[in-house]
Image (cartoon, rainbow, N blue to C red):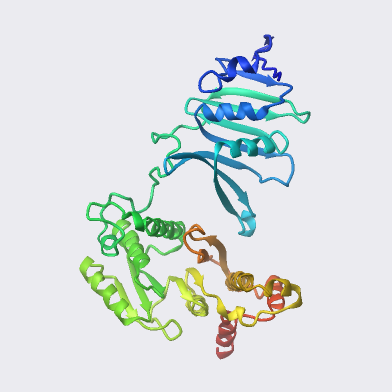
Length: 435
């Protein structure tokens, strides 16, 4: 194998350095103290990549794709899982402008990683950035297959956490190590502020939820008390978290009402409320359909309300002209029982695919209706799919000056495709006819 590595120092060019001379130095790769290299004929590019990774890579990114058949960019970082070093490959799919964007994470070994990078570069991407703790290497692919390597100091400022630590501390809104009473009573935290290992997913879910709320805080009024209704609150760990974050930690003037059908759950939540002295938090037994509130409601929340209960929660939010509506739907059975159409018969014959298609179309209809009624609406991933399949959040924010736009052609086509509409649409039509 022959690889030409030429140092470029200004206009001065020096003779080629054999890759074999440098390949096994410094844990498999050593570019001496030179700045720029040109790689001409490269028969075994995989060997070079493997050597760089073994030298202590902290970050790899591929960008400038040559075609649309590969993701727009790829990010790679080392992770330590059960004492074994793997490499997490993150690739994006979808489009942020259409609310379809998400990232796919895959943990793989060194050999598979080298194979992937060799397949991607230089055939698919025009640039790779490989970083170690002290240095970075930028590889630029030419159209003729030549590769230029530029060596610099590390681009990213490295964390004090050693590279490859998979569970390094994240800056959560509720921090681990800070004792929060309701988290202890819910079995998530110990008295010394440590998170119970088996409950760490719940702890992450709480913080992820609060991040979504934090994003829209500026949409809620600050000149008066804010009223928030949490439909189907259940054990209310997210309701308590919301109150703690807004009232205790951020000193916002709020009144939160949690509603649930189960009397024993409500009694326990009110007992904990009294224990913590959360005076502006109350829990009421009742169902969403028949609940009414005398004061203006600023924010409506519905997390995992089953089937059409989500429609009633969204209906209440629209009817009350709430500034913010957040819902994580669950068990979308309504459309599943009536969905039909020759265009989708090939999907409907498979039960699990029928369930998922019904859920996707139902939530798309809900999001479209919220847009129709003057809300800036997003469909987001609530938490990672590995923790629960109920991971879609519909978040709608009422903008100043926004008015009802009328049913969109997209919504009409969805209803035609499914062969039916949903409860939310009928509730709003009935409300309009009654007024």
